[in-house]
Length: 260
Picture 1 (cartoon, rainbow, N blue to C red):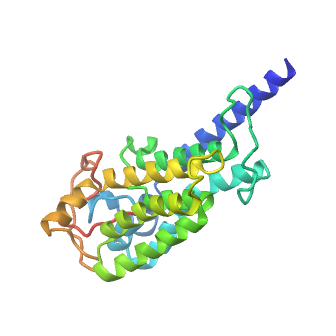
Picture 2: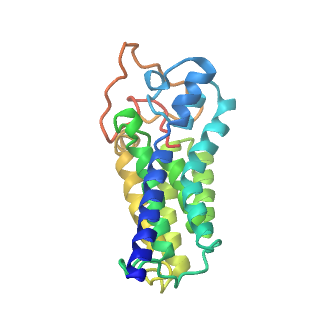
């Protein structure tokens, strides 16, 4: 009975951490900074995205690093603190099985699910009617904790592609694909073993989400209509209400592709 009670308490703590990660991930820092700094709703300007890139275009690029850092942190902090709570920082204690009630779930598995909850918060924030950003910066925060070396490789690819093409969207797509490939290559042949399965699956799911959220950007890239870094984004038509956007799109046509 004592073991069952302890397991239920541990499970409850994890579920509460998951909820907290989602609520933290759902905080729209780019949108809030737009209000605080300039008194504007950045959803009504530029691409309509709530992320750091659109904040930079609408309010000023000097605020881009702050918004990027905050979005990154809301992905990294829930995962890092969970690992610290279990004495698994950096991730070395792969064999720890947290809950007898969920026998297949260990520290890396629960940490990855917490990271996924934070990412879901950014993509579908409860505070904004479940219409959020594209999740690249928040996702980068999550994976930087769980798989730092593959993340570093993906970050280098992002920088190279951005420098060569000036497309933020293409850079994000390339980085997402690189992360998944780098994680599998770096951990092969144990990529789907208990030690690495959570990170590997998260990298694959994350890549799929990035491609899904960038679908309209992909179409514009194919048609040669995607804007580049440095181009001024046109403002969205002013209205008394926030413009409705499709779940797959955070940008208006022909605006510079963005991700963070």
